[in-house]
Image (cartoon, rainbow, N blue to C red; front, side, top):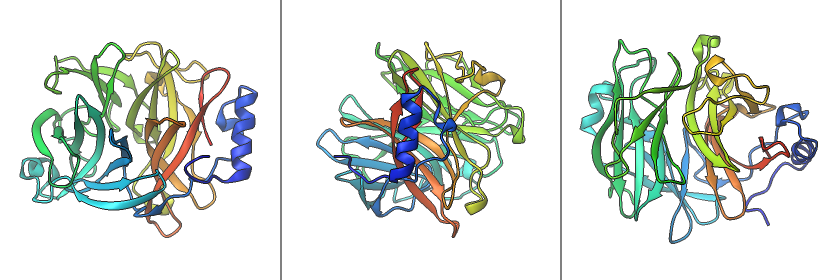
Length: 323
């Protein structure tokens, strides 16, 4: 049994697409989000499975908003990672308490969270690292700055995602607009930057160069780079959509299903707005015991940001589709 219900007709369409080796974009429509209950307001969600069972989610919010779930369906508020403020981030947020796009994972006996501090439309931004042994509100220790961009940078240090390779290398993808998605190598011992390299993974040249929110997921001999195209944060008029490319190596080059490099604007669409689901984006992927899980946010007709959860399947040609 799946842990949440799905919209039946659209599930069949996506499954049919997979059987025939098509991308999900070839199907007539996309699935609605699976059923989630309780505390479902969310923006830029990321999720980790707890070693003791259940799930911990982190989202954009004042001091980083936390949620917990026992079954990946019912979510409850769990306070803030930093309930007493984050003065070290104020120079990047202009004093705003909201921290953006946390990335959360469990590594070597502790929770690891990368998160960003910025203000809307600015490239004066920073990514910080925090750790906790329990993941509970107030238990997080800020470990300091990982990388920053300035007002004169041609890239933007927000939207971090940690990927650990099978050989134990740590890599952080990041980026929003400007010259696109970047990759830096980390020191696994410190979680901080290992060297000065800044590898280009994806870039767009239309729609204000709108690509952001990278997430790299390893599956079946490939690394898949999930990103969001177009515009977030406009309520029901948001045009966010989830795109993907893949590479045999984590450093790229990533190409879409048509063979177009993501550094040349490529990307295969796997989820977009439909009906009353507006601007689904900021993807994160969890490899769970029953399935690969896609987590994202979307907007309702009333402009509310909501948590979206679906499952990911893989076509005969090893491309992901949403169901």
